[in-house]
Length: 237
Image (cartoon, rainbow, N blue to C red):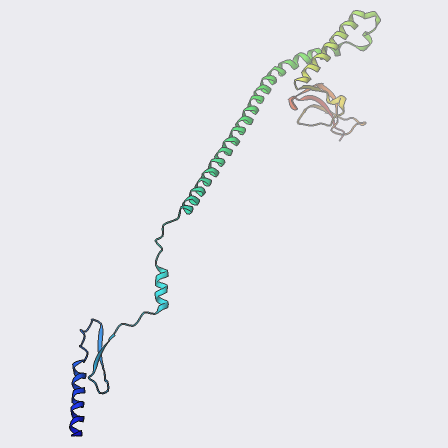
């Protein structure tokens, strides 16, 4: 009796375990079924993926490599606009400074051209005027010094009047830049830029190249030679 009861209870336990056995699941794509043995039970199927699992570091790199699609903020847009306006301001400032410089250069050039035109007009007038000055100078030279005495009052008066006229005339011409120079009285050395050597002669008491005689006086107009002086030069050797 005891053995029959043990057999009946064992058969009942086996029937209950077989009724609750797990259903076989459908096989998904990419997975392989492996049967793992279980003690005192039927074998159950487990499914495993054939593809290797992705590493966490590689997944993070892929996320970082993706370009950000975030739109620029309002502050960035304002900054870009300000930078653009600053470039335009610098460009217009450069153009303004260049225009001012060109205008000033034009003013200076025009001023020089006007002054050159005035000098040229005065130069033509001065060339015609120096001939009259030369005649006045010759008239004074032709009167001998011994003739200027009390017996010739009229001649003395005429000579003094001519000399006064010459002095006033030369003072007026000097105000306008026209000056007369006499190299022999000033003891100048011969300068080919302002002198014209007419002849050369030895002078033992003077150095070579010294101007000792003036045949025709020279004139300067605003520091430039209007007419070179014709002179005689010492040459001892």
